[in-house]
Amino acid sequence: MNWKISTVVLSGVLLILGNAAAQAHSLWFAQRGGQLALIYGLGDDLDMVKRIPNLEAVKAYDPSFEPIGASVRVAAPVVVIDAETTPAVVTAILQSGTFWRKAAGDWQRGGRDVMPAAQTAERTIKYAVTPCEGTHGWYWRNAGDAPVVLTLKTAGFYQDLFEPPME
View 1 (cartoon, one colour):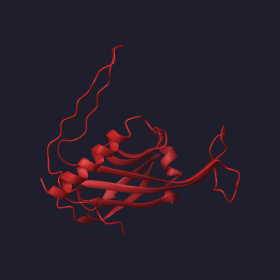
View 2: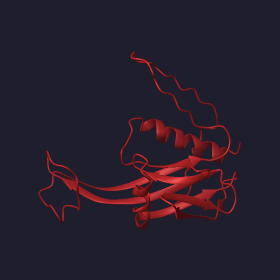
View 3: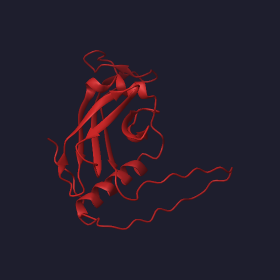
């Protein structure tokens, strides 16, 4: 396996594991009706459709990590990825926007220019990196009542992590 792909796959795994707690506002790829779809949040497909204007980039790469043409389209309620050839890796960037909140309040759209007294204000950007070929990914659910410890062992080329350039 090409070392660039290995490091991108590792980066994606680490990103997923680093965000082990489910995030209601995550950006991710999944299969929907046999097609690769871009999903936002908990999986309500229409939630991603309304966010298409904030989609900054969707890119696809071949097994040599060379860019290939990719685009998004709405297919019924799903946002699917169309690529020139079968991608090895797909990536996406979504500009979520700027939000503020007071100490005990809910998040509101806008920055400190809208609410100078906000305790916290942030600009949020969602990233997704997903390998598409080969053996990858896993799912495990604890069906019991007792806590279970999982140990992840990985192998590969991790000495030099490769981050693709942002265009």
